[in-house]
Image (cartoon, rainbow, N blue to C red):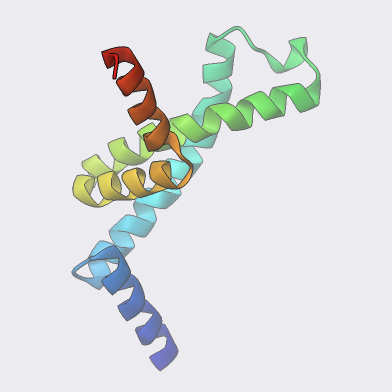
Length: 116
């Protein structure tokens, strides 16, 4: 039991959360956002005119995975906001996007558009 308490204390410190109930809310948000982004990826592809029946299976699933990632980013913020955790998930999003280089890419594009 003490290992579990120590693990929670590390998570609490790293994520800068206040309580176990906030931790539970955050876990629920991650679960809902992940599931919902997978669920909405198929209708999004169909909206774009990309149906599973019309393409090679591997190509369809690669496109679906590529749709899931941005959908997850949006859904995570929306669901996090609904659960009153916007600040936490906004910081998580910034870290996640910075790790994969999206923020650096956005900065470079904005510099190019401003002529710097």
